Image 1 (spheres, rainbow, N blue to C red):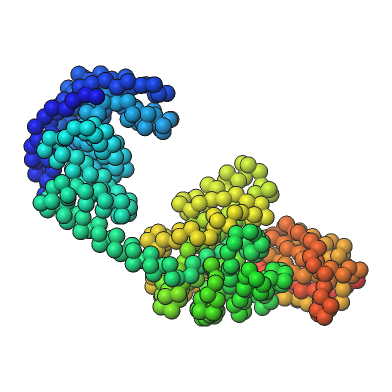
Image 2 (tube, rainbow, N blue to C red):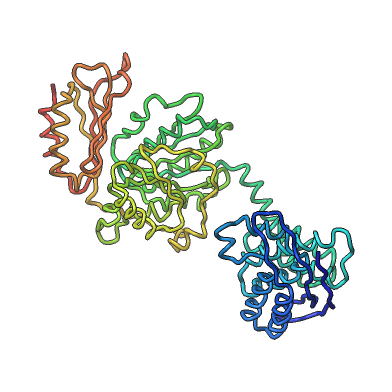
Length: 534
């Protein structure tokens, strides 16, 4: 390995104090690795010396160019080489002269002064490895030790910028062991330790709070299918579901089959109306009841109506003291119907009315691009671009029939108040959600058995004429000639119908139809259904 000769100097600039050593690097690396270094040490020394002069003059951008050239001439790969092959940096460090640590240190502190904390952290980490290797069997000079301490401080301070306070405290604490009288480092350490204590208290508090996941998405996106999938997947968690439905009939509790209460989950239904509006009080009551009654729950799922603005639901976890004490918002998952989401986003609403689909995407931490089998690759690319124009940071997962590994949705600790305040500055204030009053729902019940073939023909005709305004229809069918229930769903012009479990012995047999849409003529639709009876 090479030698570094130099003398230290104290430099005080802009209120901070660092000790730097001038030095020259000598030596060549030897390699049996895939990445082979090519060093031009004399050229590197020349560039390093020039970089130090520029650094001391405050010409940081010019100094950075010289330090980078010097590091590369010592054999370290260029940034574009590291991007192509991330392993080459580690391979180069094993071969490169230990004296390169000083150049990397200077480049690290230059990056730090230019507020490039990512590169500062990486270079400081590299410099520390080389220093520790170089002085494994020999004692560093006081100047070299001071520079080592300063490298520790740079690394710790850069980590602090990323919120890695615990790791940052180790580095800055070690720097203070070497230079205990450095006032600026003492102040940095105090700030870091305050954050470490705060994180510890928050972690202790969060460990006692129930994680809650909000599942939202426009009508017909596949939310209930997702909930069913989560409740039937083998994930070893006991979950509670708070259901909610837009309309007078809570059909989803019937679509969830027999899962009212079992060994794995408890289902609590919120009362009539939107979770985000009239039943907000019920939501608070439901969460408090679940958290205080069931000690073995691993989490709570809130399935909102397709017409819900998620804002007031999310607000509940920050504006209601009781709820905030027993639970925390873990994440918001938005399910999107890939075939119709762009249409939903583009829909013009009445003045002052919220575009629910847009709000649901804007608030999402995870977006499920569902029903991808119904669109082409080109259409899906347009859907992704449309969603990113509303929310560029949410994780997107492509799905069919809402099938996804629950670990991508639960226990992700993804919800950020800071991000939401960027999206909606009045998030923490009292506000009212105004729905488009032209959108409504109604329920039709038929006690006599229905002819399945006639129903399908009738529904297809209705969808041909009203698909733009009939956002969603779903229900249970009491079919003639069958002992089984049938379940149907429509989303705009798409309809699905499938056989479900048999009717129970004492169960009331009837067909239930739910219609949700804009300016729907209930009388006209209801009267046309009389011909469906077998």
